[in-house]
Amino acid sequence: MKFLLGILFAVFVAIVGVFAVVTSGVINIGADQAHSPLVYKFLETARTRSIANASKGIIVPNLAKVDMISTGGADYKDMCAGCHLSPGVESTDFSESLYPKPPNFTNADVVKRYQTKAGAQQGFWAIKHGIMASGMPAWGASHDDDRMWAMMAFIRSLPELNEAQYTMLTTRIDTDIMDMSFDGDMDMSDDSFEMQH
Image 1: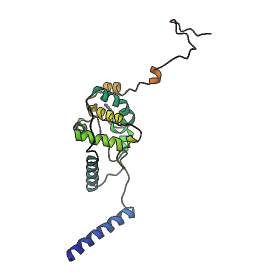
Image 2: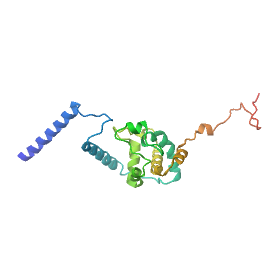
Image 3: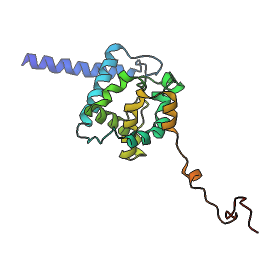
Image 4: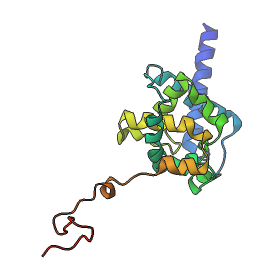
């Protein structure tokens, strides 16, 4: 019985101690100072295990399809490249200012984890739901699953792209320009496009 009371007392003291430290304000939460190695490992493990657990049942589509990769490029450029970089860009104001540092998706060693089924599930989950207190937004609030899977497919191919290929795959074609129509003010019956009177 004394042993059990000792354990309960130790747990109580630990809880009170943690509460005292948290409420005292002595913990620096500035993004310009790194966590201690122990705290960083604890948070990284919690994040990794949480995403792995939450993403287990996600069905992964065929991410190797060319149209899947090509449709994810423009969204990646608009929403991801500022933090996760692009070919030829080693840092941005965002990537340098965030803590923890966002993964560099132009690096094949970083992206190889997303080549597996579990990695693709976890990457998609992170894109859709975001990651608290990291700067990673929850894109699922504004994008459907198909667009997020296309971003995941693009990320998996990103380390293989050079700057020119990246530019080609991430250029968004403005459909308003492509669908230009004239409202009858111009006569398009001959090559001179004479104005109608």
